[in-house]
Every structure is written in C-alpha cells, then in structure tokens.
Length: 326
Ligand code: XMP
Image (cartoon, rainbow, N blue to C red; front, side, top):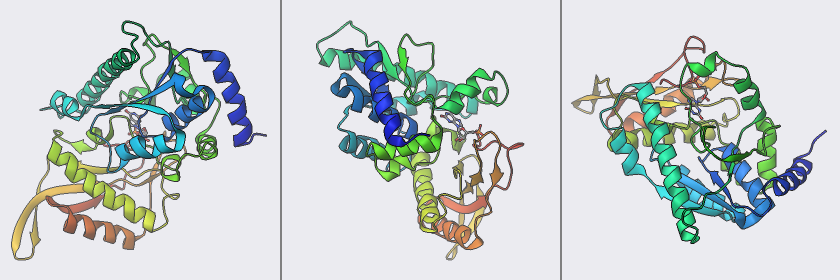
C-alpha cells in the first residue's frame, strides 16, 4: 500500500545512499519520466545534480519553455541548456528514411550530451574529470520489456532521448524503476511539478523528426508545430485528454494535393491525425473522437496553417499500424 509521499521519502534515502557526495547528471527530455526522476534526485542531493537539456529542435510548441522555465521554477534544479537545433537540422539534411533519421538523432544526441558534460565540468573548473552518476527515468514496464527480449522492441530503434543508451560509462540512478506511469505522475505532483509536465502524454524521443514523412526542414517543423498545437488545444478544450493515450499529428511532407481556397487553387500538404487509445503502447486502437471535434481541428488547421490544405484521420489499429508513422 503505497502513497506518493512514502515513495518519495524512501527514494530520497536510497538516492542519498547511492551517490554520497558525488556529482550527478540527468538528461531532461521534456517528458514526465525524466522530469520526475530529476526532481526526486534534486530533492535528495540538491546541487550535486546538474540537469542537461539538449534542445534538438524537434520538440512541440511550448515544450522547451516547459523545461527551461517551469521545471526549473518548480524544482530549483540546476539546468544546463544545449541549444543544438542547427546541429540536428544539418545532420538530418536530405534524410527521409525513418531508421536513418532515428540513428542520426540518437548519435547526435549522445555527442551533444557528452559535450554538455565537458562544458559543465569546465565551468566547475574540473576539466578532465568525469561525472559518475546518471539519472534515468526508467519505469517498471521498461524494466520488464527490456528483460523480455525480442519482439516489438526491434521494430524501430527507440531512443530514449533524455535518457541515454546503456553502453555509456555511467552508473545509473533509477528512482522510478519500481513504478508504473500513474504512480510516477503522483510522485511528480507530490514534488510540486506543474500539471502540464506531470500530465503529459507520451512523446517519442526523436520528436517531430519522426512525424514528418519526408525530409525534415525548419519550415516543415514550424508548420507541423502549428498544426500540432491546434490539435492538442482542441483535444484539451473538448475535455478528452484522458480518453486518448496520445495523438500524434503527422505531416506528409512528400505528398501534396489540390485544394481550393477562396477563388484560388491550392497545392498543399496533408496533416494526419493519429489519436489512439492504449494501455501500454504495445497494442492500440484508433480513438473514436467526436465528429464535431474532428471538424473543428480540421477547419482550424486548414485555415490557420499556411501550406496545409487537407486533414485526414488515421483509422488503423496497432497492429498492423504502429502508433507513430515512422
Ligand atoms: P510505435 O510507433 O512503435 O510507438 O507504436 C510505441 C510508443 O513508443 C513511442 N515511441 C518512442 N518513444 N523513443 C521514445 O522514447 C522513440 O524513439 C520512440 N518511438 C516511438 C510512441 O510515441 C508510442 O508511445
């Protein structure tokens, strides 16, 4: 019989025992898990923790601000921000293949993270030294899944951007290892994290990079960000956030279709809405959103987002579809 409070006390104690007086790093992705893990470690060892936010430029509207302002304000954690938008865009230039995108994003992320660590050590006048501990927001289902061997895990190369692959030299601090998602949210709320962070739906590490079917460019990212912000705002306004597991919004950048606007012909891109219901993302069904809501989202996106003239709904379950399009 757990309460968020007793988990919190217990974990604070365990973290202190594990890391002693050593320095600790934590990568923040903007997601719930890394934010709650970081906030717990901050509660336990304060300024021994430095959080690192590699902004790869593939986040949604408002998400970087959530990390840089809201997370910091609510936890008091030390944050190092690496603004790497240009780096990721140029590494991804000309790339359309989904797996190649994922590999590039993963690789650049690790490099950027390592550079951030060196910069943090240099700032602390500790050049050449390394930080031993790394916080990971691993949850109980992740533990079970990675023990389970092959299967869905091999369909796409997942990157827990914000977390890092295990072959790094760090000793891991994983205060959420015994928890399920709803427990993590409760602990996050107990730690005073804002509702927008604690209630956030799952979002892939490679971000909008795998929601643009085709090459990723700055303009396409901006367009997708606008469409996604509208879809999310309307879902929230309809009070349906809890009915939907997540709702990827996808830009078909390689497709154009003819439309009409006023007296003129348009030739724009389609946006796909992919609302799904699920228990654990391993299987999913498409969400039966109300037609009025779909109409509202479609009207607003086609009217407000320049370059988009069609909105389509994905009605595929998983399997055979995956949740993300790439
Ligand atoms: P799929 O598309 O495989 O997605 O049905 C299942 C769940 O995983 C999320 N996802 C990712 N999460 N790094 C992540 O941290 C990734 O590379 C990644 N790819 C997909 C997806 O949003 C869904 O919740």
